[in-house]
Length: 216
Image (cartoon, rainbow, N blue to C red; front, side, top):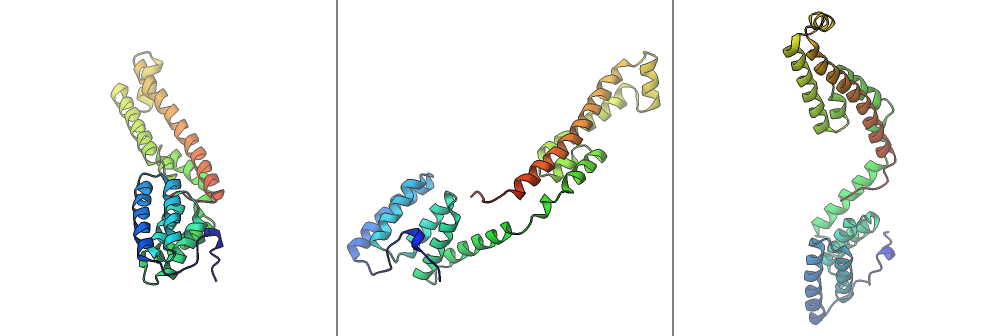
């Protein structure tokens, strides 16, 4: 059986019309505070309302929303569960409770993306195509920018004297020194893409393996 003592709420009881009217006013103010992300004010208002109408499933669910908003996930789950006890037909509270329960179960399972081979894969992909390792790491914008930069350097090599032995021969003979610019830029970009993909994969793996909570 669930232990709701952590919520510090009064036991279910019938409320008078005057109590219900006052509680509704408090909940309207609390809902406005919640929308403005003034969670402490919202929680205080909801708790005051629940002392007047302890069986109000809507108010209990609102308390769960506020608790979830500040990262108090365990208490939020208790609030959603209590809301379903106050009103077994309250599907929204049941859905929120189930969602948090599933998320907690997912946190307890080892994340395959955090396995040690992930940095190696990201590095190899960047060796083949600069930017692809970043995309694998979830850094899509950076990856696309690196790909675009590699493309620009490639076009520069073509524009300034061709690729391969012809361009190198031109540089040695002093006829085509401009090819050094895209060549050097491309080389630096290539090395950066490889190193950054490896570092990004390691950062991501470390963050996921140490993850103990989540943001809402």
